[in-house]
Amino acid sequence: MVQALHARRRIDRLGALLGVVAMVAATTLPFVVFKANRIASGEPRSLLAALPSAPLLLASVALLAVAAAFVRQARARLAAAVVGVLTVALALAWAADALTPAGNRLVRISPGAGCWLLLLAFALIATDALARLRPGPLARVGALALMAAAMWAAFAAGLFDQLSIMREYAVNASGFGRELRQHVLLALGSVGAATLVGLPLGITCHRVPRVRGAILQVLNLVQTIPSIALFGILMVPLGALATAVPLAADLGINGIGPAPAAVALFLYALLPVVANTVVGLGRVSPVAVDAARGMGLTSWQVLGEIELALALPVIITGIRIVLVQNIGLVTIAALIGGGGLGTYVFQGVGQTAIDLVLLGAIPTVALAFSAAVLLDALVDLTGRAAP
Image (cartoon, rainbow, N blue to C red; front, side, top):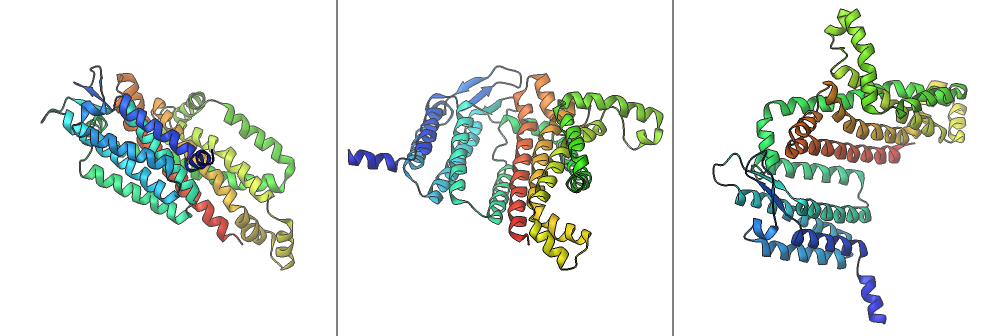
């Protein structure tokens, strides 16, 4: 009985569950989907059918699954998870090379359910290990940079060129950079404008409680409007403005295009910025404010050097929320001609081409994840540096 209890304590339940998921995904689910051409129906291929070296890969997955279940040391778990992700990625690249006939540009090889589930299982193990390690902000940024460099090196080396998503990229390479820049500009521009307007509004709400309720209620009302509906609502006044004021049309303000998308994203971003500014300023200790005034600081100096400095981590948390939110919402802007990576998502939906959808969706997820990591690190750094 005592030995059984000790054995249970040695097993990490989350790791064991994810290890079982990884083994089920590797042995029972299709690892890749083979299509003779872009519009043909897909044929699922298991790991054993896709790769000659599949038994060795299955043994590697089994070993990593055992490590996830029994290894409790966080660094070792993280190393095992990273090896697992790399193993699955390399297996996917090898399977695409093995299944694509030489010189054939029509065949499409896509990741199957087993591949996605394996990547998810190892990614969750890595996330659990990182949560236990609690790395500092600079370590997190460094890990993100290392991951980005590794991905760039793999793509530059042509490791994944035979995958269908890279075939779609090759077809759309001339416009991909333009759409990516448009996506980033819409997201960053709307959040930057919301920060410039939201900070003074938040300070006003904090200093003048009488207007706080009205301002926050209006901003809450904006948040209740579905994004596609707000885009549509803004098309009418902006179209009328472009018709009445030729200069506005010359500046790119029209009912269709980036203008309604930028305005809608700006409106969506206001509430988190204003609300977090109010909350951050409200948490500043009155003792610190009184001490600053006693030292002879003016009201503006107290605001800039004490209140905003202490509230900065909370304010940046609000900016992080809206930036991640707007990176996702920009995708919908493609429906009204706003451009961005959503262009590929909706083109893929219209053409029933899932790989074209992924060409827009995966970079969007990567942008949102990177923004979250960077701003989380900034929150930690400003929290440590606050007076």
